[in-house]
Amino acid sequence: MPVQASRRPSSPGSAAPSGRVAAAIPVQTRPAGGGPTLPPPGSGGDGGGDRSGGGGSKKRTKRKDPLWARLTVVFGAVLMLSSGVAIVGSKALIGQATSGIAKGNLLGEAGKSDAEGGASLDGPIDMLLLGVDARERWAADDVRSDSIIILHIPATHDQAYLISIPRDTEAQIPAFEKSGYGGGSGKINAAFQAGAANGGGWEGGAQLMAQTIKRLTGISFDGAAIINFGGFKNVIDTLGTVRICVSQEVQSLHMSYVDGKPMWNADAKKTGKSRTPVVHKKGCQQMEGWAALDYSRQRKTLKNGDYDRQANQQQLIKAMAKKATEGGMLTNPTKMNQLIKAAGGSLVLDTGGVKIENFIFTMRGVTGNELTMLKTNNGTFNANGNNTEGLNEETMAMFRAVKQDKLAEFVFTHPEVISTRK
Image (cartoon, rainbow, N blue to C red; front, side):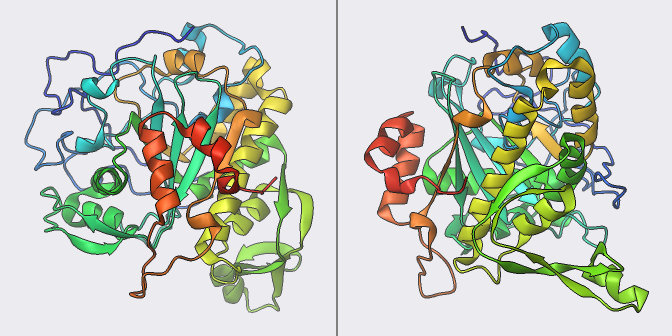
């Protein structure tokens, strides 16, 4: 049975219009693998601002209990802490293992209201996953979210669906007071940058993106995550490898071998040595962390561009979930703690007030095998003629099914939306 837990507990601090408690602790996070320090969530000086997405003038409420772990697989990487097998440890132990994790206010006005059924863990759960590829040279207010995924878990809590929104989708981006953005029309991935500008930080970027997607699809969210895909490397290395099926041979635009060692092209050039391109051969194979991440980043040389990249990133998420389940990570307390630590700076998360231990136990019936990957626009280009993409009627009907918690029925009658990636 789902665990009853209020998403919007009362608080002496200020709450958003939907009643969601605002909480954020800006922290410096370092990507797994010894990478550069990432800009902290909300690193614009205001600590993340209030849920309304306004000027951040409301007093913020600090919570002692963790809201989300940086790694859970029910939100992309989030399925890694929920599975059909027995989860070792009590709620208290899981809460202890995930304590001290930074939390972020990522939804603003796009969070579910109580009237939308968001007051408990009983109903359907909709998460917004925003993928960034942060590098040290990028400022906190100059990052676009090129990976935009909606995770839908029906009220039965026994299935999960991933739907990617094309990065070039034309969208109306609303005005955003926190960053001084006046609103306008453009590619949807620009919403994150517009919200993060002028001190809005990553939290402002996520809030404006969530509001833009809500305006486009009608979907409100229970929570959100900003995923640094580069941070997944240590997670995969902790798992060992992941099984990835390469659908078309592709030469990496980002990495080369130097003396047999994979390196970023910029670093490889500095060595002055000869370079050999990294090529991902067609077929199913076990990939180390660096290779799986590099393959999931490719876009420009793929037949269907961003649509193929979406499918590859969804495949990576599912592969990580399956490996965590099948490898015994979730039945071994030591290994599970290693997995959580390996996640390091991979995610910045927001659950709207639900404790991670309650969420994990509610989602324990969802496994990697029950993670279904869905395509928008039938997985191919649907150009508007102005260098943007439009969402076709079938895709809009799919989003309506998400909002109505009738996605299973929609998929049954529209099997063509299911991704064929392994």
